[in-house]
Length: 126
Image 1 (tube, rainbow, N blue to C red):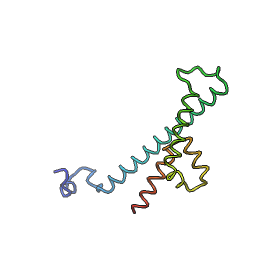
Image 2: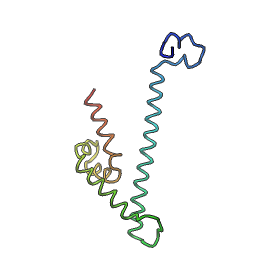
Image 3: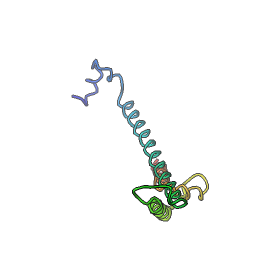
């Protein structure tokens, strides 16, 4: 009943005026906007953690946190350094200089190189 297009076309509901492509496109657009927002939040979280680590390393008595921000920042940098090594084929897909892409990967990890890999795969598929 709900999958029948003619039933939707004859329906008196306003949503009957919207075709499936519009619904799918608006859903995809909302999904992309939410994804971009989450990526921005995670990137900000990376920068905050790295900033806290640097602050704690330079001025150890300044921060009183329930964790060691310097150690957490170093672990994050180590993980992202391993990502540079293991995902280098994706890191080098960046349109700008390779050094900038490496720095962005050190800062943001897969938040930087994963969209590059996804775009390359999509381009290769098309």
